[in-house]
Image 1 (cartoon, helix red, strand yellow):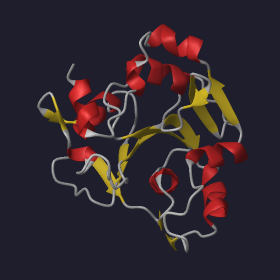
Image 2 (tube, helix red, strand yellow; image 1 turned 60 degrees about the vertical axis):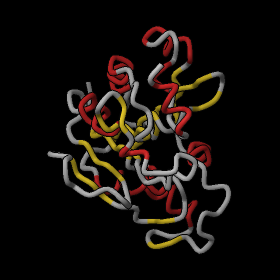
Image 3 (tube, helix red, strand yellow; image 1 turned 60 degrees about the horizontal axis):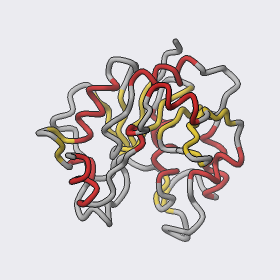
Image 4 (cartoon, one colour; image 1 turned 180 degrees about the vertical axis):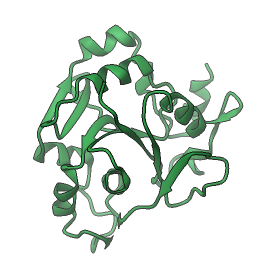
Length: 203
């Protein structure tokens, strides 16, 4: 199995949730702590990309900020890749507490040197915030943003979705049939964007 770092993308503003999603509690723990605990056994280093979090309470975890602001999750992927010392990296959103570690191991085992990204497919749609990205994506993101640092001139510009990156790089997709072998209910892709969804997570 390849040696990878994990990048937890926690840079969003959490507008629909109403507070920092990285700090929300689930079964007595912060969701991001649940992610860290699960990933530490399979990834060499954990990197959190957040413009709000501080290092308190996250022992052994590196926290970095966006280098390019205003381009949404792409900015988090970019900052995490820049901070990482491994070519390939697992990227996961901070609001996905039910990740299936056996599936993560499977994804990591599929990595080939030439892959720019490995992405799960759910209902014929890419799930870009639970995938593997290579450092070769850095210049592509910078090209899409039109800058290498600072704030994009059209802050929060439309069109800066991660799918645009996937259109520009070499991607290997993992089909739903394979994913269901690890997680038949596909619960690992449940993410928490609202207080109501947090309540659903307890059910």
